[in-house]
Length: 224
Image (cartoon, rainbow, N blue to C red):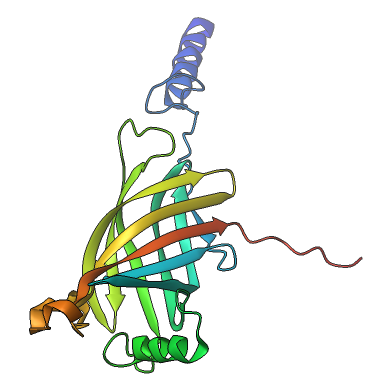
């Protein structure tokens, strides 16, 4: 009788042990848990970020700056996964003309309906839809191909460009020179597409030299 009880007890113990999850190893019931790295959103520091524009015409060019309104970059570990930013179109500045009257004349024209219609469309935006690392990119060269939706004057078009991205513990920096076809956003003043005289043409593309600096928000230290 004692032997039968011992046998039953042994079988019960074996059943319990087999039902428990494995404490170690690579099996599906392993107690080891693999935790995926969490994506992080880093706000763009608009004071440290810059945006320069350059537009060429027959016989010359104009250039200047414009301010970012806000933005953010999404990173996962050391990879850029997404992001967006908004541009304050009313902040456009002309830097190549030093005479105040002439400078104001061009600045006001750029804000008018011939160009960016800033009273109607105060903000332009860009949103990343795809960030693809460039394989074997050399140091200092573009290491990402960025694709996203650029919205100007309420019109959205996809755009793709190379970018150089640097990611540290709590910061990310992205630089790029972006070429924009203004005619896709209904900006056709003096475009060759509308029959402008050859010596008065403003080229259809302009460039944006962009530097985005994003960083974790600093925590203010309260008084004790």
